[in-house]
Length: 338
Image (cartoon, rainbow, N blue to C red; front, side):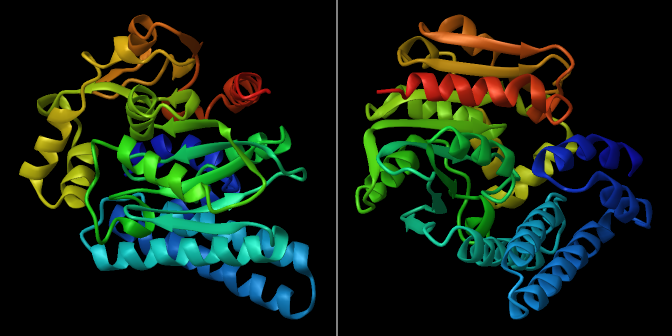
């Protein structure tokens, strides 16, 4: 238990959880089986506080509390817990809390959904600019990467953060999709119904397993101008993967055999040379997961790839946010400039 808590702490920091509160909650756990209930209880407390603030007209406080609730509900689902119905409820609570936060703080935000995806479109102050899709990973969701979305919005870029097959609110009804470029294509199609976006300037950012998905989209989707893979895998070797990964994939894919078949398909070896658009590969030097070949190899074989390697960064670089996040947002803004 202490190892999982310590490994997840930088990720909680990157997702915007207060680390002192994280330490209090995890310090009181008797078992990792208690993780979803403990984190979910914090999310419900924030949601209740948000409801009270909203009723009193304290809109900013209410919106912030709803966003905190969304973060905690998301974090509650990080454990590969056997109660999958409970995990689905937590994902739905995260989605609803984010909806209420956006309704109060960003009423121009819009739900965008279609076959195999659901997400929120958030807009900067000025319309007519580019848009970036944010794609989560194996056990992640659209409620995790607030700091990245806010950094892009501050640079005049609209953001569509989505859950895809096997992710977030869709995890209970779908399995992970290795051909994720089809999901990205359908999301781009759906954006055509929303005014004030320059769909000639679109990009995708994927994090963890989402980094692999972003590379797939970069190879297959001609409408993209640029792509970023953060802590993404280049290849998976099932026999060497740690139990956390195999258990999580097993639950989300529908069993160990389906999970292994999914993992066996994740290999960018043949695809990397075909990725010709600008690609930024962001890696942490301390990101070492057995069974995972990191995407630094992708940076070597994709013709227009650049590598941003942060030596002290871990997986998802929650230990090094200032060393990659502003630079990545600037890189995207430059590639999507008129």
